[in-house]
Length: 154
Image (cartoon, rainbow, N blue to C red; front, side, top):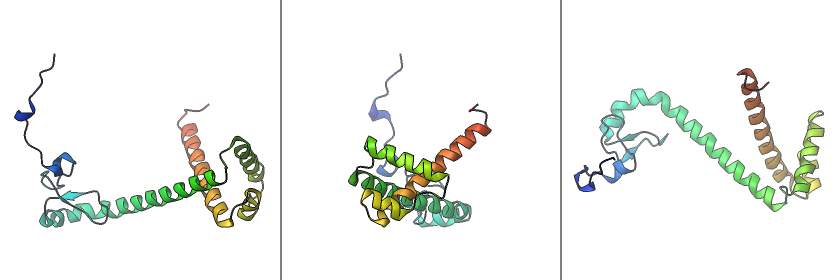
Protein backbone atom coordinates (compact mmCIF):
# COMPACT_ATOMS: atom_id res chain seq x y z
CA UNK A 1 0.00 0.00 0.00
CA UNK A 2 1.41 3.40 -0.98
CA UNK A 3 2.15 5.89 1.74
CA UNK A 4 0.24 9.15 1.67
CA UNK A 5 2.44 12.18 2.20
CA UNK A 6 0.68 14.99 4.05
CA UNK A 7 0.49 18.15 1.97
CA UNK A 8 2.10 20.12 4.79
CA UNK A 9 5.37 18.25 4.20
CA UNK A 10 5.45 19.03 0.46
CA UNK A 11 7.35 22.10 -0.73
CA UNK A 12 5.17 25.11 -1.47
CA UNK A 13 4.60 25.89 -5.14
CA UNK A 14 4.21 29.38 -6.49
CA UNK A 15 1.24 30.07 -8.75
CA UNK A 16 3.65 30.23 -11.71
CA UNK A 17 5.00 26.75 -10.90
CA UNK A 18 1.52 25.30 -10.41
CA UNK A 19 0.64 26.54 -13.91
CA UNK A 20 3.78 24.93 -15.33
CA UNK A 21 5.46 28.24 -16.06
CA UNK A 22 9.10 27.31 -15.54
CA UNK A 23 12.06 29.41 -16.67
CA UNK A 24 13.74 27.89 -19.73
CA UNK A 25 17.14 28.82 -18.30
CA UNK A 26 17.08 28.06 -14.56
CA UNK A 27 13.86 26.00 -14.09
CA UNK A 28 12.56 28.39 -11.43
CA UNK A 29 9.04 29.82 -11.44
CA UNK A 30 8.57 32.17 -14.37
CA UNK A 31 6.06 34.96 -14.87
CA UNK A 32 7.25 36.26 -18.26
CA UNK A 33 7.08 34.54 -21.62
CA UNK A 34 8.27 35.12 -25.14
CA UNK A 35 5.91 37.61 -26.78
CA UNK A 36 6.29 36.14 -30.25
CA UNK A 37 5.74 32.40 -29.76
CA UNK A 38 4.27 32.48 -26.25
CA UNK A 39 5.77 29.06 -25.53
CA UNK A 40 8.97 29.76 -23.58
CA UNK A 41 8.84 31.19 -20.06
CA UNK A 42 11.48 33.18 -18.22
CA UNK A 43 11.95 34.40 -14.67
CA UNK A 44 13.72 37.57 -15.82
CA UNK A 45 14.62 39.64 -18.86
CA UNK A 46 18.24 38.60 -18.34
CA UNK A 47 17.36 34.91 -18.73
CA UNK A 48 15.29 35.63 -21.82
CA UNK A 49 18.26 37.43 -23.38
CA UNK A 50 20.60 34.62 -22.33
CA UNK A 51 18.35 32.05 -24.04
CA UNK A 52 17.67 34.10 -27.19
CA UNK A 53 20.39 32.56 -29.35
CA UNK A 54 19.06 29.04 -28.71
CA UNK A 55 15.40 30.06 -28.74
CA UNK A 56 15.49 32.29 -31.84
CA UNK A 57 15.36 29.52 -34.45
CA UNK A 58 12.50 27.69 -32.71
CA UNK A 59 10.59 30.88 -31.97
CA UNK A 60 9.65 31.80 -35.54
CA UNK A 61 8.61 28.25 -36.40
CA UNK A 62 6.46 27.98 -33.27
CA UNK A 63 4.83 31.36 -33.94
CA UNK A 64 4.09 30.37 -37.56
CA UNK A 65 2.58 27.05 -36.44
CA UNK A 66 0.41 28.86 -33.88
CA UNK A 67 -0.78 31.38 -36.49
CA UNK A 68 -1.66 28.55 -38.88
CA UNK A 69 -3.54 26.72 -36.12
CA UNK A 70 -5.48 29.89 -35.30
CA UNK A 71 -6.33 30.34 -38.98
CA UNK A 72 -7.62 26.76 -39.17
CA UNK A 73 -9.66 27.28 -36.00
CA UNK A 74 -11.34 30.38 -37.43
CA UNK A 75 -11.97 28.64 -40.78
CA UNK A 76 -13.46 25.56 -39.05
CA UNK A 77 -15.70 27.73 -36.88
CA UNK A 78 -17.02 29.52 -39.99
CA UNK A 79 -17.48 26.18 -41.80
CA UNK A 80 -19.53 24.87 -38.86
CA UNK A 81 -21.64 28.04 -38.79
CA UNK A 82 -22.43 27.67 -42.51
CA UNK A 83 -23.08 23.93 -42.17
CA UNK A 84 -25.64 24.51 -39.42
CA UNK A 85 -27.19 27.65 -40.94
CA UNK A 86 -28.01 25.89 -44.22
CA UNK A 87 -28.67 22.41 -42.81
CA UNK A 88 -25.79 20.95 -44.78
CA UNK A 89 -25.32 18.23 -42.19
CA UNK A 90 -28.79 16.76 -42.74
CA UNK A 91 -28.61 13.25 -44.23
CA UNK A 92 -30.28 14.45 -47.46
CA UNK A 93 -27.92 17.41 -47.95
CA UNK A 94 -24.84 15.50 -46.82
CA UNK A 95 -25.55 12.80 -49.41
CA UNK A 96 -26.25 15.43 -52.07
CA UNK A 97 -22.94 17.17 -51.29
CA UNK A 98 -21.01 13.89 -51.27
CA UNK A 99 -22.48 12.90 -54.65
CA UNK A 100 -21.85 16.34 -56.06
CA UNK A 101 -18.22 16.36 -54.94
CA UNK A 102 -17.60 12.77 -56.06
CA UNK A 103 -19.14 13.33 -59.51
CA UNK A 104 -17.44 16.67 -60.04
CA UNK A 105 -14.06 15.41 -58.78
CA UNK A 106 -13.50 13.65 -62.10
CA UNK A 107 -14.01 16.98 -63.86
CA UNK A 108 -12.82 20.26 -62.37
CA UNK A 109 -14.87 20.27 -59.20
CA UNK A 110 -17.99 22.19 -58.33
CA UNK A 111 -17.71 25.96 -58.53
CA UNK A 112 -18.52 28.15 -55.56
CA UNK A 113 -21.26 30.06 -57.45
CA UNK A 114 -22.93 26.75 -58.45
CA UNK A 115 -22.73 25.45 -54.89
CA UNK A 116 -24.06 28.75 -53.50
CA UNK A 117 -27.03 28.68 -55.86
CA UNK A 118 -27.85 25.03 -55.03
CA UNK A 119 -27.98 25.67 -51.29
CA UNK A 120 -29.19 29.29 -51.20
CA UNK A 121 -26.06 30.83 -49.72
CA UNK A 122 -23.67 33.57 -50.72
CA UNK A 123 -20.70 32.78 -52.95
CA UNK A 124 -18.38 33.79 -50.09
CA UNK A 125 -20.01 31.22 -47.80
CA UNK A 126 -19.74 28.59 -50.52
CA UNK A 127 -16.02 29.35 -50.90
CA UNK A 128 -15.46 28.93 -47.15
CA UNK A 129 -17.42 25.66 -47.09
CA UNK A 130 -15.73 24.16 -50.15
CA UNK A 131 -12.25 25.22 -49.05
CA UNK A 132 -12.74 23.48 -45.69
CA UNK A 133 -13.88 20.36 -47.55
CA UNK A 134 -10.60 20.53 -49.50
CA UNK A 135 -8.68 20.64 -46.21
CA UNK A 136 -10.46 17.45 -45.12
CA UNK A 137 -9.85 15.71 -48.45
CA UNK A 138 -6.17 16.65 -48.39
CA UNK A 139 -5.85 15.31 -44.84
CA UNK A 140 -7.55 12.06 -45.82
CA UNK A 141 -5.29 11.63 -48.84
CA UNK A 142 -2.17 12.29 -46.78
CA UNK A 143 -3.24 9.84 -44.07
CA UNK A 144 -4.13 7.16 -46.61
CA UNK A 145 -0.86 7.66 -48.50
CA UNK A 146 1.08 7.50 -45.25
CA UNK A 147 -0.79 4.36 -44.18
CA UNK A 148 -0.26 2.68 -47.55
CA UNK A 149 3.45 3.53 -47.56
CA UNK A 150 3.90 2.15 -44.06
CA UNK A 151 2.12 -1.09 -44.95
CA UNK A 152 -0.87 -0.49 -42.66
CA UNK A 153 -3.33 -0.75 -45.54
CA UNK A 154 -3.43 -3.66 -47.94
